[in-house]
Length: 284
Image (cartoon, rainbow, N blue to C red; front, side):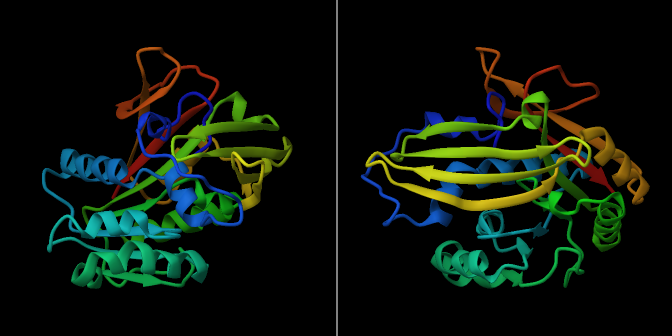
């Protein structure tokens, strides 16, 4: 979502798609977000393979916290009739957009997904095999008490052999006020704006803008008010929440040694870099 040189999203830059002329007045911000930030097919493959590696069988029921447009949920359920999912988000706008654009096009398959306009701390209808919180969305919880409560609820909500997966970013670049531009093949510029950062509280104000060849801009299309959590402290809070094992999956790099290659493997120490994206996989 925001790593300058080592993001799991960087591989999207290499996709060749037909360019169309876009302007701020004609675009759909949720569509642009999915193009710029999300990689649901790759994410679902990672989640599914990780579960099978750990448990020796396939997961069936999936839960997406802070689901937004439910892109992951849609990709999960369309793989086969045995796959079901739930999504949780308090904002009805992206949820309704996702129903229209991601779920309804699946036809009868869509009935295998249940979306909740509820807080992510609320329990599932069915205990999930895999529960995830992607794109650092859970960073809305700014205190250790809030984060521990959220993780504890996730632990209790999982199926007996379930796993809870969160992604995160870090590195010194993440603590700087800066703008990062990414030219998308679809004909617009994705801008990650680290606008404000306060080192005492580790809080930050961050925005996503979209800019277009005609000079127009969709300013602050998305806004975030987060605490920037560290990998080590998140791992320890997960352990305090009851998870007996929490592993880090670290992203590898392309041949140039600078860009992320989208391949995540279990690592004990990682490597020193200006910016990174990683997963924490917590086993019940």
